[in-house]
Amino acid sequence: MNYILDASSALKWVLPELLADKARQLRDDYRNAVHTLLAPDMFPAEVAHALARAERRNIIPTGDAATLLADLMTTVPQFYSYRPLLPRALAIASQMRIGVYD
Image (cartoon, rainbow, N blue to C red; front, side):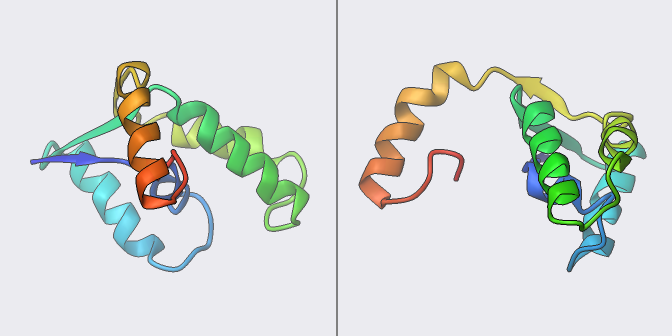
């Protein structure tokens, strides 16, 4: 089965967050070829941004973001370009009054 991996779910692999155990199980199942993980090619930038923000908010110590990013990137999903989907994502975001990322 294919799953779309959101950066917020992948961050649970390395950050102490609610439902981290389920996120790590998803990662482990992917590593064991139980299913496939897909993500937009902006995924690495999204997780890096969130880790930098976690440092600023003192959720993780300053300097840990680089190590955690390297850990995250050892289990990368299959990347797909988000650019062809951007016009449709913007239309949905406008209609639903939500963020484009959603």
